[in-house]
Image (cartoon, rainbow, N blue to C red; front, side):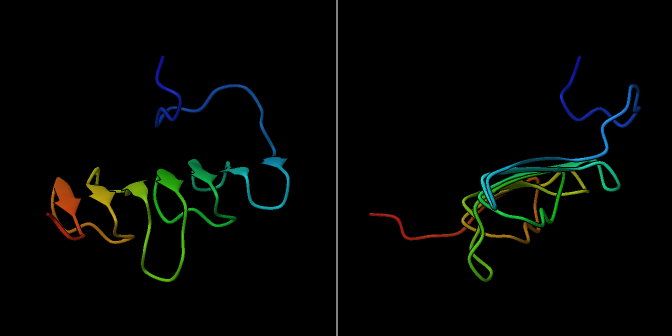
Length: 79
C-alpha cells in the first residue's frame, strides 16, 4: 500500500517530529522532511528555491529544484 495514496483511510490529524524534521499535512496529503510546509506530495529539504528531492503534485521528480518542469528534473553542476 503506497505511503501517500490518493485514497485516504483512517484518521491522522497531524504528525510533526521536532520543529522541521518530519511533517505530514493531511489537508494536502503531503510529507516533508526538513521543511515545515511541503510543496508537493513528498519533499526533502528546502532553502529558497533549492530542494534536495521533491515529488510534486503533477508527479514530476525534482533533484536540486523545488519546482520540477519535467518527469525528472535535475538542477546542479556536473563534473
